[in-house]
Length: 241
Length: 241
DNA sequence: CTTACCTGTCTTGTATGCAAGATGCACATG
DNA sequence: CATGTGCATCTTGCATACAAGACAGGTAAG
Image 1 (cartoon, rainbow over the protein chains, first blue to last red):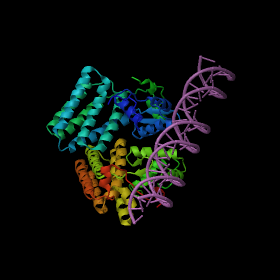
Image 2: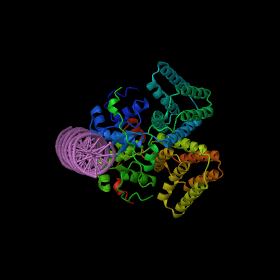
Image 3: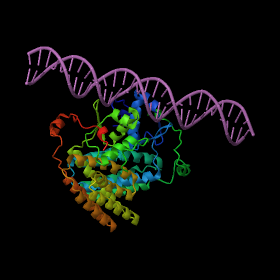
Image 4: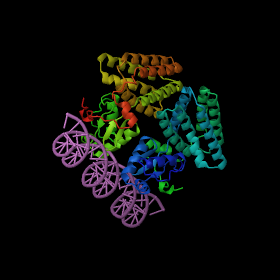
């Protein structure tokens, strides 16, 4: 799962590696993704890198600035709110529509919560970020709808990017607690309550963001002139660790 | 809106044209999309065509069969059910989360219903298909969440492909009536009722499908052998009309 | 008549080359 | 010192060339 640095010679190795880097918060929003560097890194030609980038672009994970480069998206405050709203709607709807839940499913959820706890205890922040996002995907997996799973996977990636941009401090405890409460309700097969808790949980997380604080102080001016973000960040090649 | 055949020299003209062709049911599931033909048709090189195809592939609208070609997806019965389920969850959630609705919004919806009625009266089936799908997107637009709008747009395209595969006969009247009832509830700002009606509406449409009937009688065998669908359909170049 | 095979043709897969734009720096100029 | 300008370099955009596989039709053997 977390071996994004392992070189799988697969069709979408690049895509997977980048998403997985984002999911574990190793790749920050605004990171420049050079076609050449990725090509040499993955030992393929630029063609394949570009294909991966295009795919990621349609998933709203990277963006191209013409003739300047590919960048991991930096969601605006409005986008951030839209993503959270979308997640609330989808996840709550998912839970509300649940009718049954196997004991095996419950066990899986407990296993996940245990992992979260372990990561917190170990202070493994990368792993924790990944797990926190994964929790919601796990729930979607229980519902067993591949369409929604895929949608939520991408929304989760975007959520993590949003967190990296706007989250002042990471209330891991609070999030974990929220997850626990949702699982509790699910254990009782009270999916309606689980849905409500899920909305509340996402609200809390969103409230924890500082959507006024822009990492880029020129945001407003740039926005009003509709210019592309100008950055000189560390490229992905530095992301070996 | 419906000028998919107009050659816009834009970045994603090909993508737009194909999606729009699907939305109006001019392009059928299983249609082969030849890179060369599209390239000459749009007067670009195969490179750009391939880019568009890759984008459409990540949106689950086309599929590539290695060294054989690109095909418009033919959703399986399971996929079809998953798509409808996803739409129920998202659209109902969307309506339920609505708090306000401007009079302008109501007017827009009425305008849409009028268009549906006009298309039915004129017997313009292509336009009708397009409108029927668009209705749900319009609602999402009222909610104003770009993330969900985009998601629903793709799901709508897939829904139309599903219809073309499994719908025995098109109960336009019934669908239109369903839309009317949803709008009625929204007028009264009874979004909860609108949500319920929306679920019911999608249920009705799904029930109207014959998910056992495969247009391809060898489906099961092929599926169990996990072979790619083998077709000799009219390519997209024939889709002038 | 059926079946196996072989070959020409057409398709996509992938790499590479070149063009065009963006950027940053050195330098000249006010 | 501040500012404008030209160039060198790096980036992506796009087309093209070639390789490799799939398919169809014909042919020969059983």
